[in-house]
Image (cartoon, rainbow, N blue to C red; front, side):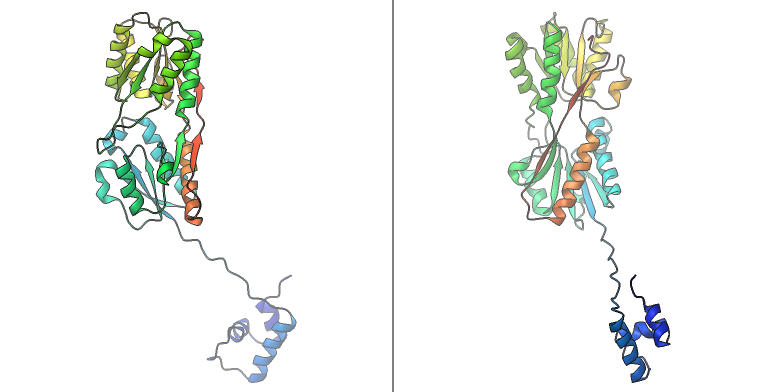
Length: 328
């Protein structure tokens, strides 16, 4: 059992405070030399050591940048979910957060330990951010070639799962892909359409032309579904690049009295909460936004402790969840 100040004080016949001041070499303490020597001798005889008090860890402060303006984020539950999950994960790890949206870059805080950027950014934007924040992690964009840590979903793997399922169960398969741009008007390269085309070449070469584009918003999914069905009347299954466009496509099918899934099957991508409450509930490729957010926060915290390590890119698995919008 460890020797305490109380033990020494009892043997020396003095107060605990006196023992403490003697052991801390308090020159202002008025005691006899014999008392001082007695306390020091007892401390040595009893092998007394000072207790080590843990210093409280300084709270990490993390800036969060959402690539959408706040009002646009409300219409994209995927990025909303990621942002909320990052804030929650950071709080669970004892970090403070300061969130900024795309239209307010000038408000990005400087007095932070690192940055988590959510979404898509041009090379110029990433360079500027990295120059400002030595430690940063990007979620949903592969930035490894720029020396920036990132966490990305396995989009190609998810499209492969969904596409293979549709080609194996339906006769005429098409896709509604998406085009999007960074806030400085640079087009974002997306692997979804190219993965679909590769699958089409394997299962049904004619299907590679059954491809329409939207802008990841509900209205564009509605219009793309109308164009796609107009071009390919025999179409009986469509893979949609995100949930918002899938809701638009579903609305058009309902208006045209095309039964889902009896006459048209739909699989979407992201698997946000809306997929479960659509009619019918939508089969979707699930992207684990909670896991991505947690990995990103942990990656940033690790980077703060080990700044010299090589940059990392974490690829998070996706998986197909079948619901009532597919017949099988």
